[in-house]
Image (cartoon, rainbow, N blue to C red; front, side, top):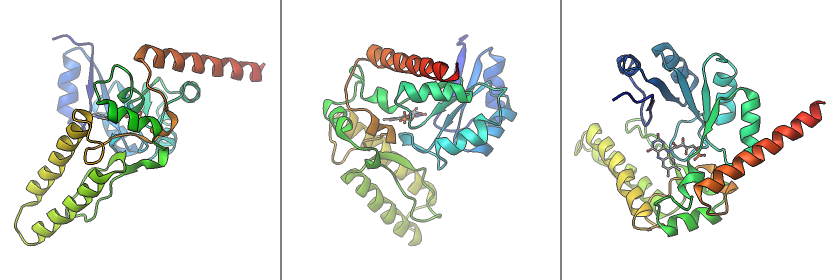
Amino acid sequence: MGVPFIVFAGSFPRKNEVKIAKQAGAKVLCFASTESIATRMIDYGADALILEGSEAGGHIGHVSTTVLIQQVLFKFPEIPIFIAGGIATGKMICHLFLMGASGVQMGTIFAMAEESPAHPAFKEKFKTARAREAFATPQYDSSLPVVAVRALKNKGIEDFGNLQLNLLRKMKNNEISRLEAQFQVENFWIGALRKAVQEGDIERGSLMAGQSVGLINEIKPVKRIIEDLICEAKEEFLNIKKLCT
Ligand SMILES: Cc1cc2nc3c(=O)[nH]c(=O)nc-3n(C[C@H](O)[C@H](O)[C@H](O)COP(=O)(O)O)c2cc1C
């Protein structure tokens, strides 16, 4: 269809998938949450990376943005890299540019924008939440691998813990296969996110949020969010310029 950019997100593409996307004439952007995934995506021919640290909201990896910056951003200056995870200020954007980033990707700040279709109760919860409340779910046993999800702590997170323990028990008793258990884990998040975002059930639903939630305490229109970020970033650039002259 001639789209200029293709972003592989949610999982990691195979080499052939990157090749097909590039053959269609698109620039290809791939997520990376570890140094080895970043290296693999570059090998596959990715034109740019979205380097996402574990501070981010939703499904996450285990390495922080700070460490990924040093492992990947500083190591591959030739490839455009967009940084994600824990960013919610223009000041931070300015410093990431100075470190060599080509841009940033932000999720939590836009989930609570005025135009976001999320339920008002979901956004209100985000407004007052602190960074430490954005909690990453644990994996209880390696026989049931689960991708960590960062969300605000509530009954839904407890439900997820209990679901994992129940599934592990059923697997041990050969009542269900590992594949079925993993399917139920993923299904939990789809249902739970809908419960919170659409129905406003902030107790049992999933409040996927990054630690950056602690930096945001206002519901604003997207236009103002972007204008404020740019204004703050520019101000920081000028302050640094003054320091250097
Ligand atoms: C509510 C929510 C849902 C998200 N859903 C997805 C998703 O479906 N696919 C994806 O690749 N990233 C998803 N993300 C991650 C964002 O794309 C982004 O990388 C991340 O939010 C950046 O970190 P931040 O939350 O600190 O800004 C989601 C993030 C949030 C907060």
